[in-house]
Length: 185
Image (spheres, rainbow, N blue to C red):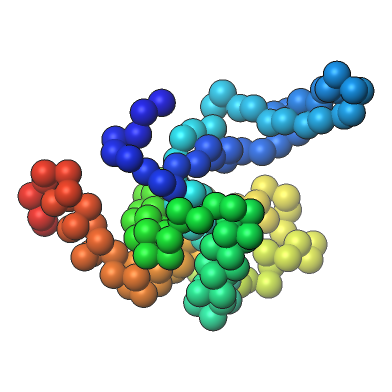
């Protein structure tokens, strides 16, 4: 795979790590080793976008309070392991631009999901951080799964919008378009 432009933040993303994607083998010395492979969900991506993906289900107030600390720790961990080319400005630029992926994917099935919850009589009583998401036994398994999906999507949208606002998404997007010879919007 060849990226569209040189990218010091190139990463391999594994979006769906489940046990059927794991494999185990022994090396020549007999030491057990592990790997993961997935034809469906794996992709070449951007490391900052992968971290945005990892953060987008966090409670929005928690991410807002700790985002800078998390990013500093990630970058320090990279430096401690000899990865020095990932700068904070580059990371923040790609992290911010990467949120659009979660925003789009998060909204893909939202109307169907909320429509189903409305039919089940749940929609009108939903609240952020709905206590029923904790599986207290008040809902059947299918309804609980849908309610948790709606809560996770709420977090996704809220976090994406907050990250975009905090880090100047519109200006970064305009610069991204200009760098690729596209008209600003």
